[in-house]
Length: 288
Image (cartoon, rainbow, N blue to C red):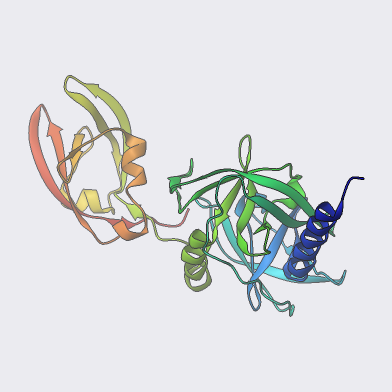
């Protein structure tokens, strides 16, 4: 006779994992979109930035079935993290910085049509930090072999013991997890400032092919920006920054993260074929 006790025990354990996390998970209504969020700290909710409309009111659906108003406290497009503020009293979840290993079971606790939901999957990739297509630094690459509906985006990713290790979001062809380390780095800045500081050179650049590599031609210069103050002009071709040859315009943009603001960089350019160097103090990118 087949013994189903191990399966029954696993089923009960997974149900318990979902039940313990559900009281901290809310649905998020933004314009016509529906997503999920979870309570990070008292009065503060983490959700997927991609799921939020650019404007309009935000409403959250609470675990008891009621609704409450929320405001956007801050958002970062590059890491897909948004922070909502609410007066509703909901217990926060405790996040763990542990990155689950390849092949580990994972449960995503979220909402679907304003009701609690859970999805079981496996960690299909577990690796080092990476940069998003928008240039955000994600502290660990975690992919889940699980199917999620759009309304479940922003849900909690839990390991088999119930530890929450990040937020589940929809990637181009897979479900990704924004890990705890990224959330704990970005969310406090959003709470205080509403945005993440990004480096700014004040230049419009166009990639050009050079005989000895790649350059970036200056197509326009912000007259009030740091490069203009340093003396860089339209028509200059940037070939290196801090002694490192340029590998592309996108690569240059990715170096202008939060820690670059205020740094002085040596920008090597060619002006009329002649080499010239400038010291540029990286500014903070103005709000769009």
